[in-house]
Length: 324
Image (tube, rainbow, N blue to C red; front, side, top):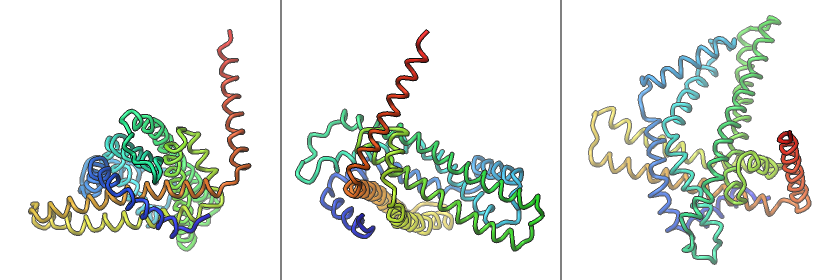
């Protein structure tokens, strides 16, 4: 398995080699998505939808028995509220522009260095877009299931200790720290698998749960590398978001108007964010190729044969159910 630094170098080299294609994708397809993401994070917290989400999550945490004095659950409530609001706000752009951009990037990378990519058509782009859309919907369900599982485990832990009588401040502090680590690990691994599943869906023309299963198999023994790559790209996203908040949002809140220089800075920062989204997809594709090259052929063939057996069993059962 290649090191994360080598994968990042390969990704940057691939981006520069196909610079004109990727910058066009960033300009026409990813730019609206980046603008919606940055705007959703810059909106004030006094919006009714955001306040309603925060209050409902707070009542859910209180009903579940989580300690109200825990700073971890307070921060988690704020972050979850912002994430839910941002996901709803950017959903139309994600299902259209972002998935089309990822399909275009996958098509460019599937051409290879010797192919000129001029034979790509809108029909072939839609052919890649369809499995990406189905896989994205399944990814959302998997992320919701991972969050529900983590919260259920925390609910059982805190309520069991409350019944036993172990509710001292030191124990609650230790459990809150352990809960933060556990939730971060579960969510990080889930997001990494879902991002890899999108690449698998585009590269192998499979969709839904099949792409997620193949991503889980490819992730065996490579979780540390995938998390390192995800950490690198997320640090870049966080840096651009902080720059947008400092240079654009802070200036608007101070003067309550947009000057020409601030508007151009907003456009430039949004374009940089779009480049990072393209690079993140390229890194995912290079990581997928690295996993495929390091995966033994017998293991891959054995997994594909198991998938075929499962599909044949499902088809046989459906035929039996349809018989009168």
